[in-house]
Amino acid sequence: MRCSPRVTAAILLSFAGLSSASAADTPAKAEPFKAVPDNPFFSVNDNRLTFAYIFDGTDPGVPGKTAKQVYAFTHFDVWAYGTNFFNIAMYKSDHNDPAVGGTAGATEFFGSLRSTIGFNQVFDTTAFTVGPLRNVSFEFGGDVETENNVVAPAKRAGVLGVQFAFDLPYKGYINVAPLYYKEINHNAFFSCAVIGRPPCLLDGNTEFRGTWALELNYYMDLGFLPEYLPLSVSGRANFVGPKGNQASPINISIPTVVEINSEPIRLTLDASKVFWGPKYSHFVDVWVAYRYWQNKFGLDHLNNPTCTKLRSGSCTESSLYSGISVKF
Image (cartoon, rainbow, N blue to C red; front, side, top):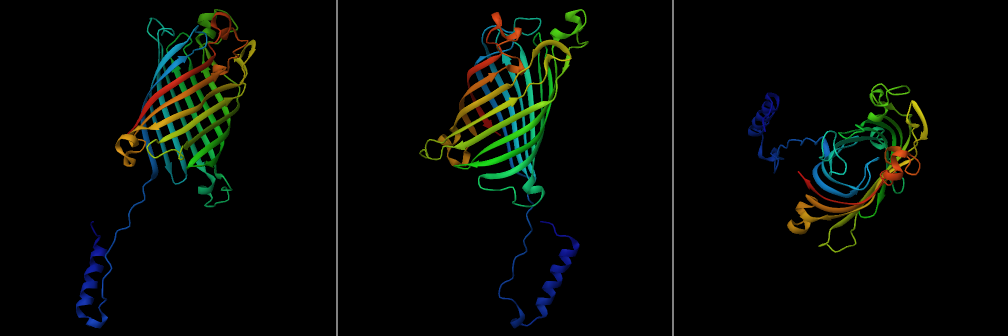
């Protein structure tokens, strides 16, 4: 520790005063000088790498099942006024969903950001903590996505709303967020280069109508199990309301419908705690999940030509999903 000249002078003057004081005036024990520790900006800062495998994935318009490898980076932090969550993932399809210009599987990149600002923190109050309700927060964020298949999607979406955070047993939680959702995307099939005549979209870009969304996620340790079996359960569900016609502003009379993108349950084993002890809890997690996605991208799985006849089932995904996550 380096002291400023002012602090150094004060210490020297104190010693000088002590040397001229009587023994009766000298304190029995001098209190040590302690520096005030700096508070870290993030109270939680968690970064993870994940490899996972989707056994029976689908892509709208692609007949049959498409297995996908997933490589992802996830960041989560908690700071004085809220939280930040960021995820970027690469999905590598098998040959059933080929990339443009070859027989290799398509590659998709998807990124998602969600941030919250807590009302309790902003207003320095506990008014938003009632019973199991822990906090109410302002939430905002967005999603981006692109894939090198024939559709050539280029999703850009923004969300804005509130989040209600509730406590669950065993230090768990469930978050419920009603949101406003706005999406712009791209579909090569609706470009003038493909259709060749009006009505068409000059570049294939599609601006959908703003709509509602509802996002839920939960986590809970299974604390009733023995110490040697550290399991936890988690899950999520995202609902996006109808956002207009599939290719708005082109009216093809097939409106979009409610999209359900969910992972209802994920069972996680804290493998590092099992092998190396509590000090390394959740450094290595091994998990298995069930993934369910209906009306992918808002396409009506019962009526949209992309999802029916030979392509039947391509707009609904029901698959086992397994992986390993490593904290660093």
